[in-house]
Image (cartoon, rainbow, N blue to C red; front, side):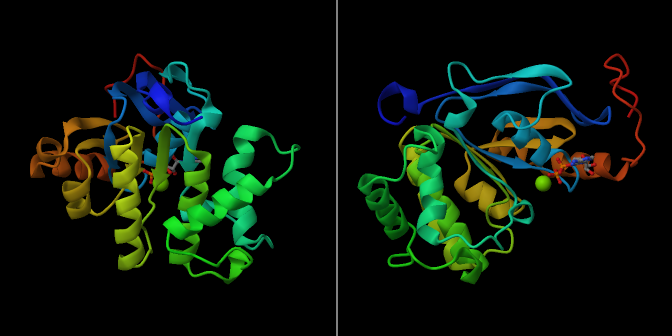
Length: 256
Ligand code: ADP
Ligand code: MG
């Protein structure tokens, strides 16, 4: 897609509950990621952050409630999974990996055109990997590989971009460069949502924050949300979780 008013899209969560074998990982979450907003999702380990991102991306179906993406098809949502979920032992070149961003919108069987190869080259230049086209992805450092995945997102040209811990175990220079790219996307009116752990980074670069601990702890302007009281509450909720928490019965939502 790209260009025009299609660049802006809001995501609305209505009573969103996502479960694994009926146990809720995300529990009755309501709210809106405004069109063109730049939001950090913050919360303790196991808080349901990745689960929420996957529900927005459409790879997990809600048990209760829904994700309203307006007119946006899920293939127009750019999604970068947590590094641990990506297998890069597969013998793919950097160029092919980047061009997969375009395949999603043009269909895998129409073939790669000169235009796509040119776009991939430009995207690699934009992420500081000029000339890396023919390298195998398995030969890259984790920082370089993350740059490749951002280049792929550039080709996908999505109006909503979801990033799950994009800077975990990534070097400072790569983080700085990719934060700039996120800021460019924000300036272009794209809706960007990123799961992050570095609170200072969130304060500096992300105007909105959703603090999640299975339920919404707080959601709004970052400066208000990252209040010590809220952070303590989120941590406290995480410590009270049990792996055999009760199944979601919807009407038992206050029995955590
Ligand atoms: P976060 O990304 O905030 O660390 P997750 O969304 O990955 O949290 O996980 C939330 C909860 O759901 C955790 O208790 C986790 O163990 C559980 N969970 C995540 N994925 C699965 C799965 N595929 N099957 C069963 N439980 C899962
Ligand atoms: Mg996660």
